[in-house]
Each structure stands twice: as structure tokens, then as C-alpha cells.
Image 1: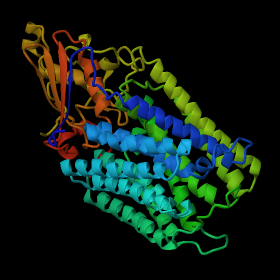
Image 2: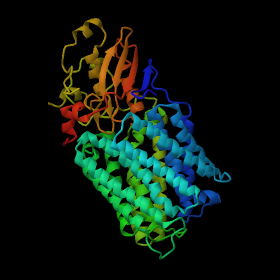
Image 3: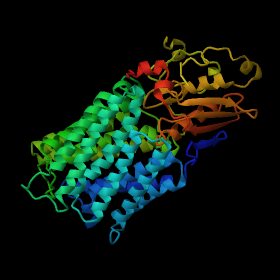
Image 4: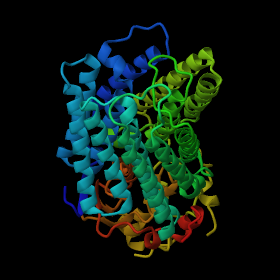
Amino acid sequence: MDPVNGPRAALAAPGRRRRPPWVPPLIAAAVVMLFAGLWEGLFYLGLPVPAGGATLSQDHGELMVLGFLGTLIALERAVALGSTWGYLAPVAAGAGGIAIVIGAPGKVGEALIGCGGVMLVAIFAAIVRIQPSLHNVVLTSAAVCWVVAAGLWLAGWDISRFLPWLVGFLVLTITGERLELSRMTGTSRRRRMLFAAAAGLFAAGLLASLAAGPAPATPGGPVPAGVRVTGAGLIALALWLARYDVARRTIRGHGVTRYMAAALLTGYAWLAVAGGLWAGVGKMADSGAYDPGAYDAELHAIFLGFVMSMIFAHAPVIVPSVLGRPLPFRGYLYVPLALLHVSLILRLAGGDWAGSTVAWQWGGSLNEIAVLLFLAMAAALVITSGRPARRPRQTRRRAAGAPGNAAGPAQDPDVPADGHAQGLPR
Amino acid sequence: MKNTGDAGRGRLDLPSLLGGQPGPDTLRDLLRDVIDPEIGINIVDLGLLYDTRLASDGTAAIRMTLTTPGCPLGGYLTDAIHDTLQDVPGVTGVDVQIVWDPPWNPDEMMSDWAKDLLGWTR
């Protein structure tokens, strides 16, 4: 790709921007990993389902974060970069994830996933070369977290010890993007400095977490200081998002804009909850079965409450960008979003905090149903999107009178027939 | 590249009307229907659209940028631009070029209207 002039999309009607043929198989691989991870989630919840293989049952967290999400995030970035070599990142992550699912011998899966992380770092290095900026450095740091996590996984560290790095990959990816978008609400140096301070605290926690070493935490053992510092960093980042994120403004919008903002803001609340748990409890040990302690809450507040909410938020934009097919917004997409958050409250409050196994299992199962429901709705919307997609609706209509509008595209069904005529006075 | 948000708005595009082909201002106005779905504001007021031209063969040449080179919205917006312009009389094709020079600068490129909507602060 030309470093100055980005991807050029020469379009001869009725063609649109072409996506490489390997994009759909990569998405399919990610979905397979999601299904495998959700299956193991049911096993983890103590439901009477087959374990699905020793490797798979041990690697639920790594598979969901580096396999499923790693493949999708790397694919999203490769599409954005527009260079063929960039697709090596999602291909490696996807192949590695599938190797984990099928129980490939040795550490082929872990190694491939690690290669995917290295390639993602290369993608961001190319992006930083085009546009050196704080947000792109943050996004590059996120990819480095992936590499560190995969390296510790390969080296045989217990997952409870490198969990902060898995979290680092996702949290820095998301907050880096939010920092970038926040420029639409202002560009003051103060807000960038505050973000840098919050992210720096978070990164310091990640580094300090390494001091705990590779062995799993022992019940009643000391709480790693790094986990608490990481938690403080999560709280700081959540506060920054609550103060500066553009979703605070776009929640007043309509349709998909409001939906995305709702998913983002509720996700930020879970980020703060997770930070509080990490900083206040700091426990990072898994008993291997139902653990009424904080481990389950610490993980799923962030991976489901924060990260999955971000996925629900961005799917209506990312899926069309990556796949080249519209995912028209419909109001019923709020249903899985609400179910995700309500069931997570049930899981954490009723199960993890109050100690009810039934609440924990119901909450966890409904978490999975929310994810599957969203996936099914999104797939159905993409498949049936042959008809004209409902266009996103502008926050408020500008005054119109644009010459040529009569020959222009069909109007948003949400907008009154005289929407243009009404417009907004400047 | 200060975006006042008024470029071409309400101006009589006489050559366009006489020639049966949309002029640059008309194309620009049409692209106000291409909306960043997350922000809810069109690409013109966000300052992402740099240049619009119609070649003699009817190809609409669109030069635009994204907020950052890693922005995953490129494919979405490119398709939306195509869908917006493909049925416009006089347009036989669409050529969207995404450029990074000059880089997007919200302070200078976003319209005052968009800034007001987003509660712009310095």
C-alpha cells in the first residue's frame, strides 16, 4: 500500500470495494473458535456436557481471547491496512486457534497464535509509520501484550499469571480506538496526558504482574501487587472513557448510533467494576471448579461485560467493513445486549458474590445465550441484506436543499418524508 | 482546509443543471447522505471528504481520508459512497481514493455544526 495514499477503491457500478476471498473462511474459523470456547464455558460452569478434550478444556481463556478475538481484531486491522501481507496475522491466529480446538500435538496452536500477534505488531508498525500518534502507539502496545501473553503461554506459565496480558491486549486495543475517536469532541493536550497517565498506570501493573512468576497462585497466598495496580489502571481508564468518550454525546442520536453508544457506555461501567475487583480483591487464582471467590467475577466482568459489549456495539460497522455486506440495524439488537448485561449481573451478584451455584450457572448460561442470540441475529441480518439496507440516521438533519437530491439515494425510512425540508437551522 | 460546512450549500449549480452531469458541489452535497454510523454525522461535516470531481467519462472521483490509517471503517464508507452515487444521472462509475496527506485534523476540518453537536471543547 502506498504509505501516503491509502487503499484505492476503483469502483465501476454496480461493483463495490472487493474483499479478499479468504475473509469469509477466516470469519468462519473465528466462529468455530467461539463455539468451542462457549462449549467449554458450559463445562466450566459445571453443566453436564462432555469436556471436549483435555487441551480444549484447559485453554478456554486463551482460545476466546487470542484465538477468537485475536483473529477478528487482526482481520479488522488487515482489512484497514489493505496490504495482502497484513492478512498473515489473522491467518496465523485463525490457524492456531483451530489447532487448539482440534487438539493438535505439541504447541503448534500456541506458536501460530504467537506468530499472529507478531504480525499484528507489524501491521501497527506500518500504521505508526504512516501516522505517528499516541493512539496508534497504544494500539501497537496492545498487540505487544498479545505477543507477551502468547510467549508466557508457550513457556508454560499458568493462565492466572498471564491473564493481565490477555486483558492488556483487549483493553488497550479498545481504549486506543476510543482515544482516537475522542478527537471528535476536542483535542486538548490535557485529555491526552490524562489518558497517557491512566494507560501508564495500567501498563505498570502489567509489568509488575510478571514478578509473581509462572506457578499458579496458591489458595490463601499473597495477592500479587501487579494485579492491584492493573486494577487501578482499569479504573483510571474507565473514568477517562466516562469523561471524554464520544459516546456521551452520541447516546442522544438515533438508531444504530444510539445503540452503539448504549453498548459502549454500559461496557465502560463493567470496565470500572472489573477494575474495582482487580484493585480491591486482587485475587488471581482459579480453583478449577466452581469458585465462589472473585476469580470468575474478575474475568467475566471484563471479558463479557466490557469486551463483549464492545463487540455487540461495533458489529453493525465492522461486519460490513470486513465482509462487504451490510448488517442493517434493527431495534431488536438491544435484546441480546440487555440479556448480556442482566445475566452478567445475575452471575456476579447472585453467583460470585452471594454464592448461589444456581444463579451462577443460570447467569453463565444466559451469558452464552446472549452471545449466540446476537450472533444469530447478526447472521440473519447479513444474509437477508440483499434488500436495500436501512441507512444510518444522522444525529440531527442539516438544512437541506441539496441540488440533485431527487436523483439521490433512497431516504432513511426512519426519516420523515419531509425530513430534509424540516432540517436544522444553523 | 477550514470546513465551514457551507460549501456548495444552496448554490445554484448551473453547469451541472445544463450539462445533465453533477458538478463537484452537487457530488459533495449528495455525500452528506454518507453518515459515520457511530457518530451519526455525515462525512462532509466530519471533514473526511477532501475533493470531488466528475471526469469526462462520467466517473466520480472522490478523494477522502479516515480519522486514522488503522480505522476499520474504510470499507464501510467506500461502499456507502458507491451506493450513494451509483444511481445519480451522469455518473457512470465511482473511484474512491483514501489518502493520508494531509492527515485528518478535527480542529480545522470538522464543521462548526458537527463540533456543536459533539460538544467540542478545547
